[in-house]
Length: 461
Ligand code: MTE
Ligand code: MO
Image (cartoon, rainbow, N blue to C red):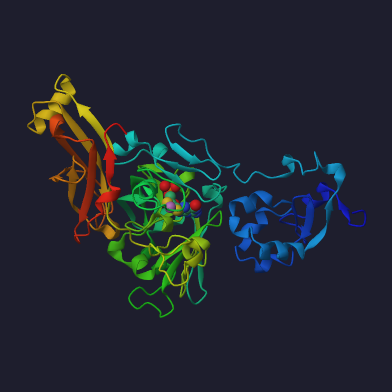
């Protein structure tokens, strides 16, 4: 109406990050949220939006899309965007800063599920090698890739008594023992598509077999850093229960302190991946690498580590990455009572299923190794378990689970205190013995076995 103040966009721009009072627009309405900022549950990430539109951030942080949040925002309403600045009744897009402006160009071989944020799985052809090339290592981003450069990136470690110590990448390289490990990262949603198809519908991105990849990581041990910052590893204080990690774009997660300080736990601040500096998508200049644990805890672009009595308060620690019984739907889920996923269960998948012909010279070599003289089917894939538990067996069936065989476990050079990296495997069966439905299930050293029904794969798919 004509009585509400009309505010020019140029004026909104002046109330950005460095201004005394901070404004945002949502739709065509303007809000002065200065007083709200200190109490914002998501912390200072809100400063990205001030001086401009908040709409695209709420599309990413969909947690805001509820009445109580709308009500809070309305209480800070100060006026409407001046109609002179509107195009077709809307705030023009050039007023809206693109939070994804630092996202890198990505390899075309990646199989993209969403682009903003980037969620992309490794294609099956790339899952056949021991270490996945950096360019085709799966990418799981909840937000944008933050602006980061070695020069201005500082890592702060905070202990329970409030003591803080700051490190640059150069400090890490100069003052701590360098460690190399091979470790597989797997998103908790890996193969969710198959769970949806074979068991029951599972919420979230419908990943195939490629939300997993393996790499050689170089970095320094988190435990060495914590000790340097003043934590007594031999006699941990009572209130040191979790190590919380905060990424530069606002993502956060935590792990139990026992894993963080375990010498054989191999938790790293990693700065190299397969002999290269970490690529932007994978945490440049440094990330946490928690081997054997769900990849959601390996926080990229890490800028702060807090040793605390509490788990991370982030939505990814408390309102995501938890499991509920088969009778519990989203409305009944008691998030506060379910434990956060840490170590992962045993997993395996078929990544390649192909006909091998005795008419081809290269195929004949493979047939010879397996003592076969007729056309056959070659099956290949990976197996992996959490907690560094070694894969001891890979069971494979070519007739939908009626008869089982043991796949050949391929030899690779694994680095680190435990079996953090996947086990690749292969198996050949004469064509006439093979049905159309193949099944794989792996067994780890604790004799944990995968359920067979999600390990199916049909010939020609
Ligand atoms: N760290 C930050 N800062 N931001 C993120 O969105 N995603 C997590 C984890 N660390 C994430 C993060 C999740 S859910 C996964 S599966 C892994 O990073 C993916 O690591 P990658 O993209 O290097 O494969
Ligand atoms: Mo993930």
